[in-house]
Image (tube, rainbow, N blue to C red; front, side, top):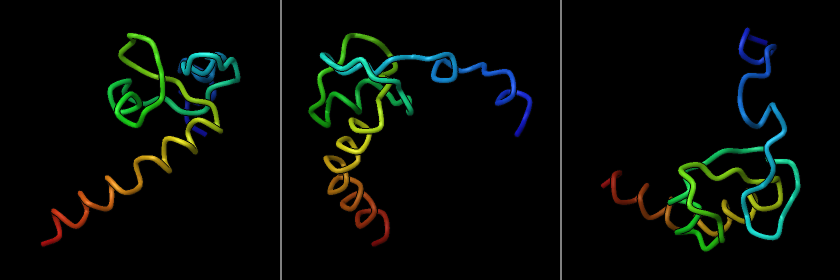
Length: 76
């Protein structure tokens, strides 16, 4: 554990809530709000979107195909 982890400096460590409208669970990940919006999740007009475990899982499922296409694009 490094110093920043021990201090609890980040917003998630301080108890940020999920940014998806209608959800109030504890956030586990912070992502760009633009990426989250393109995945189809409804978040506010913030720069960062904080996602709970369930919404992060949903985000990963919805962006899986896009990530695969990008991977193929750059490997050729």
